[in-house]
Amino acid sequence: MNSKEFLNAVELLKKEKNIPEDTIYEAMELALTSAYKKHFQSLDNVRVEIDRKKGDIKVFSFITIVSDDDFEDERYQMIYEEAIKEIPDIQIGDTIETEVTPKDFGRVAAATAKQVVVQKIREAERNIIIEEFGDKQDEMVSGLVAMEDQRNYYIDLGKTQGILPKSEIIPGEEIKMGSNIKVYITKVESNSKGPLILLSRNHYGFVKRLFELEIPEINEGLVLVYSVAREAGVRTKIAVYSEDSNVDAVGACIGEKGTRIANILRELGNEKVDIIPYDKEASKFIENALSPAKELKVFVTDEKNKEALVIVNKDNLSLAIGKKGLNVKLASRLTKFKIDVKTYEQAKELGINIVD
Image 1 (cartoon, rainbow, N blue to C red):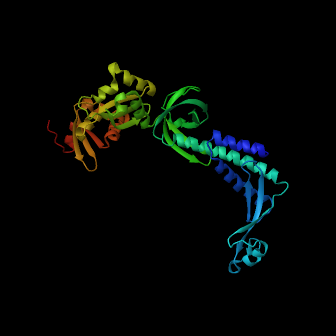
Image 2: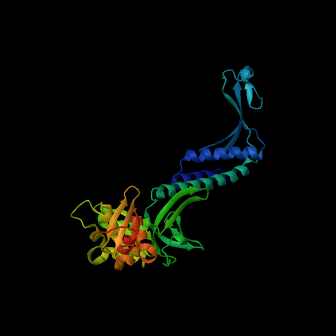
Image 3: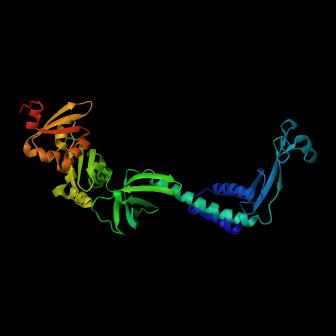
């Protein structure tokens, strides 16, 4: 890389990567100083200067002018009384510089310049990506399925790729190469290898963002999402409400003839979605959350520790608990209550008297 090529590279970095010119030159000068010390067994009192107009590179050694009391090493310092014999107006603290650029320094400089340019390009691209995606954590984006390996899918997000682990897809779904998919960003960070953007489709936040995308009233703040509980690929419960009594929160999510919820279900495949009306009264909220079970009696047994007892008849017991206990587990996550489900008979055996 000659002087002209170097200046062109700096100009390219400045324009296309938006890196300040001074940042490039300062990084280059520091790198060249280290390279000079390494290849020419130099002392520490050297600096490299790059001509911003011509691209010429020069190396200078310097000594600092000190008082007789502060003098320690003649390799780095000169006593003031000696210095004024050569330079009458010199002051303590000034430096005397001598150019020491080696004839074959160009070879070292070219290799170093390439390294610094590549490094600055990587840093610039990393900063651009972090700046663009840094505030998108916990958001949903769309991307192209670009690559696949044994453990991950790699999603093209435009300026970078995100990683969608196969453990984070919806169980049972098929991801096709070249297809556009929606993904939820779970983590954005910068490490030694560059920006890391982790994605998911089985996170509960993915469903929440889908509702925000498909339901205008949620996006506008007329309908609010209180909580979401999800077993990806099987069932999701989402609690919604509105502070406007004229707005039917559940109805808004379902849409006319179920069109809105149909779009969400299509994205989730075979996953079932229960839209639960949130209620400030804990017992009523728990009753709603245990849908599709009906005819429930809910008792908040410990408000502080959030514990509740639910009494059901035998016909509704399996619905309340759900297959492998999933319904009550999701209801518990949704309401943030520990829910204990009992039949009337079980309650009586425990000495709990339930009055109809």
